[in-house]
Amino acid sequence: MRAHGPRSSVWMRPAGPIPPIKEHSQVREMRVFTPEEIANHNESKYQGVLVAAKYARELNRLPEGAIQLSDQKKLSTRALEAITSGQVEYRLLRRRRPEAE
Image 1 (cartoon, rainbow, N blue to C red):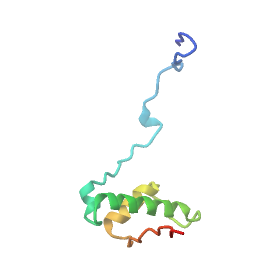
Image 2 (cartoon, one colour):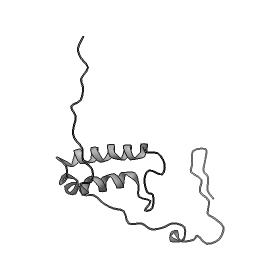
Image 3 (cartoon, one colour):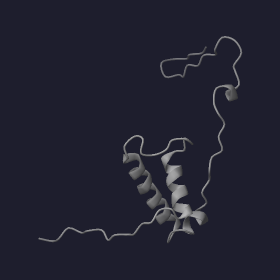
Image 4 (cartoon, rainbow, N blue to C red):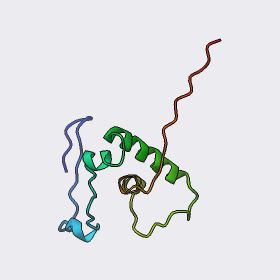
């Protein structure tokens, strides 16, 4: 253990050998979505990411049990998969501007 003053960090070593990380956690592959992949199904990669973010928020608002949680994917990953596979249909709406008084 070390400590050198009030602002120093303190670290401690556990007693005994340090177990490997693989024993305590599962190793999962992370899905990577390329900008080109997202742009193929949208007008632009930026629009695709914004639509996926909005869709992930909508998924998060659903009541418990409405979504199957068998594969334990994050909602953002599910949304990007749905956007890139064409499962989600959307349309852009013009932003309403406040009327001048």
